[in-house]
Length: 135
Image (cartoon, rainbow, N blue to C red; front, side):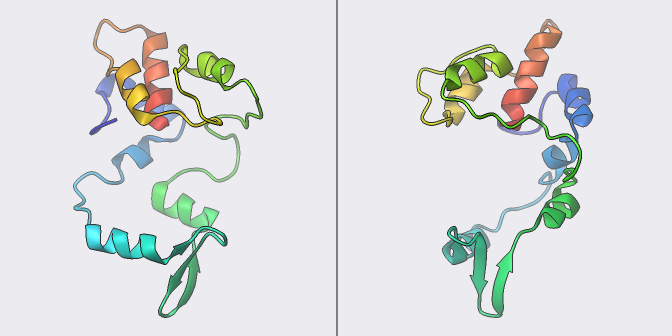
């Protein structure tokens, strides 16, 4: 989803502990050369950055400190092991995408299916928008 979420869903994002993640990039200018350099040095087989000074990895503590996400307690969503991803999508989002590839869904589908809520939206529509926003 582009930009900050609607103020109508701020409380939902705070409730699930995701508000800080939403606000962390506001006002920051992305350095595309730095991002490219990090991508080039990422080794997915070890989940590690290879830098001139040595290896660097991202830990759960880093996630907690940088993004303010809790790393203990309840997760935003429970772990789902399913062969029927359409049912999982319907349970969480109330809609099933046309194209599910091994649990992956297209971000464009989320944007098209879950427009930003307005004053007339129901609580269920707002909750589903928040799920889609987090995804």
